[in-house]
Length: 187
Picture 1 (spheres, one colour):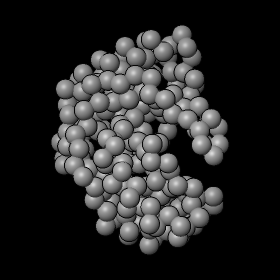
Picture 2 (spheres, rainbow, N blue to C red):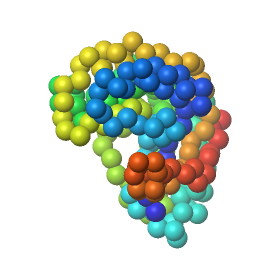
Picture 3 (cartoon, rainbow, N blue to C red):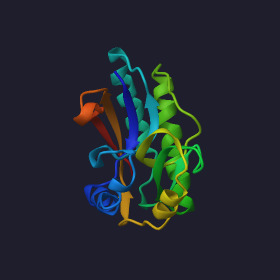
Picture 4 (cartoon, rainbow, N blue to C red):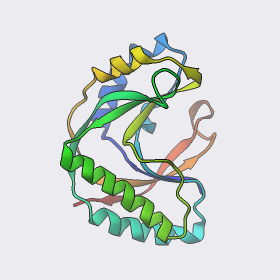
């Protein structure tokens, strides 16, 4: 099973970002992320064998209990790999130093839980972000990054971590369909 561990913003935060982007989407031929698919990936797990799922859930439960809630909001943005040759346009998380530490520890804990459950973790260095659009080929997106830099959504508290299954091609317009398998409360 293809899965990922993520922070999922509440509906109010997603709706606010969606309203900000809605009026601007027609100006660019990007593949915009559907609002219900916005999340911050903590760990990507390309292949989770069924026999490892219970162990993964148990380890993620323990990892989440070690974490502390923190306030944040969706704010700012950027592009991967950079604004001059972007393939991905993203929105960031506005967190204080304690929140930055905590979200980093959540990612480390999620990755460690998966590894200890015998599941390979994919991905590069962790940088908390929500992918808002993908580009078919590299493009210069400086004005989009400046636009996202002006954005600041409503405050919310990170109080849980989600384990999400991703079913490729089963969502709207051939996109993945996401299903929350389990949610883990943080302290």
